[in-house]
Image 1: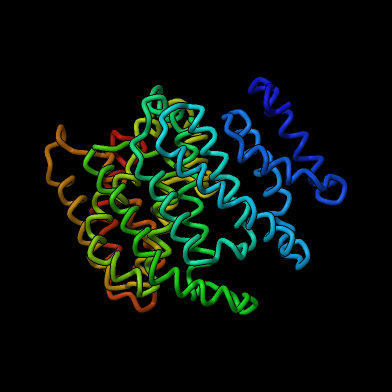
Image 2 (image 1 turned 90 degrees about the vertical axis):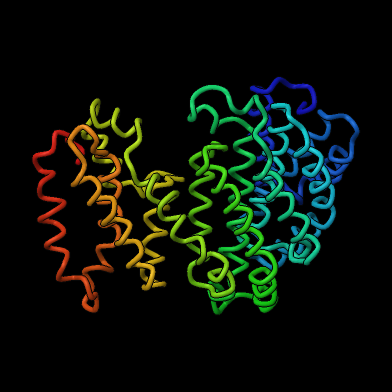
Length: 389
């Protein structure tokens, strides 16, 4: 039925099949995997898409069960038999432009997401599989968005299949690094083979992923590329994870000043959407700003977390950030009223606010200067015509 049903009905069928599999697979539906493989290896695009949906449903079944030894062995075998073909399909789809191809690629990304969510299958731990899959993820991230994914408002673009594919490509790379690829983040209960994988990933893969992310940031900063909120969010989460480990910090460090000035700062400044919300619904605006960590994939929350991690882990970077903030507020102070940029000042003040625990700490060499900063740059804004300040 998945082969011939319409998209709305297909979604309902997929939900029903997923529910059945949760209770009956593999014991009461032992041939479902064979059916899935047959579909994946078919020559008809509808068959392949149905196979992708079936494999995604299977991966969802095991995503939380693989912590059980017998279930992990079952799923390892499933991945061994299906993921080489899944990789082949994804590698072909990334060269396409149609909305249908984007939907299929999104399904490939989500299957991988569920496959690695709690444990890393043995097949995906090999050097070659890691190379192949990370290469695919980076190709998706670097792909020029097809025209069908760039129409409408930004919120509409984020819902297209191609931008969802990019979102999950970012998320998969982040999951590999944060959960499995950072030796210092592995718990004591982690399996011995994870330690070896983490060492390999940190030295061979993390720097290349960082390079790919920074290339996307450069394009966004220059105005040559639009990035969705999830893309920006996952980029900043990855950058935050690169602050502590020396193997990647050495690659990130030369870019810090540019990142703070041209990525972090703009993301912390008010947007047109923020101003509109402030004017139309001040209560919701305050809720959004004071509870921004409730919003999934919020770039400004990720930017704040990055600043906090940077200044706590690499304390020498604090002074360059404060220098940047001081240049922004001083420029605002000296500019004629009709040339002041209130959004920039608000963004600079948000940066200071995010660093409060660092600059007001007991060992902070500038704690005694904070009061003067407030008197000069904060208190005057109580009379500002720009109410959000």
